[in-house]
Length: 178
Image 1 (cartoon, rainbow, N blue to C red):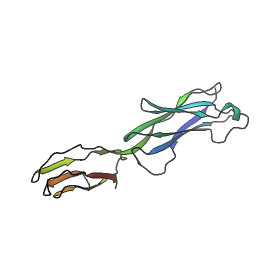
Image 2 (cartoon, rainbow, N blue to C red):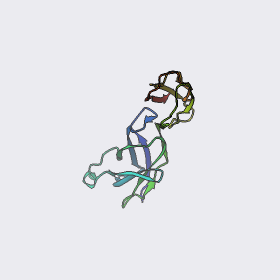
Image 3 (cartoon, helix red, strand yellow):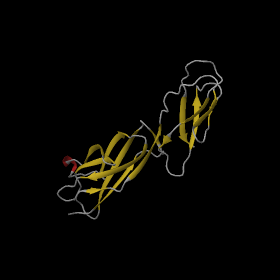
Image 4 (cartoon, helix red, strand yellow):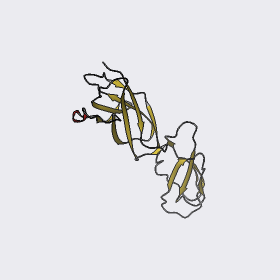
């Protein structure tokens, strides 16, 4: 059995990514001190959820193997901090193995739902967001709020007393990495 190094990364240099944004995950299976070429497949997981499987060095390339020994998969990840691992299935020369976890931060903003209030009502509505790397902070903004309401740009709390006219309002809230 030959020894190899299994590593995992994504192709994006910008963190975090937005929910619904596609990311390409790449696993490298690097032989250590051998001329054998690892072949087979790499399975990508998000925790216990299967993301997909990608080929690694097809048999046709065994005589002239690529220098990268990589398998790549493009996926949409859910919002939050995703726990990504790559599992190399092994072959006749290399045993199977699992990469160290790679934590991908995906920004997500939860829709707080419909709020039914009347002119003169006091409002306090918290917008929930997740997916930032540790130590980062949010910047919130909102458009389309009724007159008298505003959003705290640091906390995402919408507060105030409605002073606008009686009508239906459709507000859009944006959260971004500060």
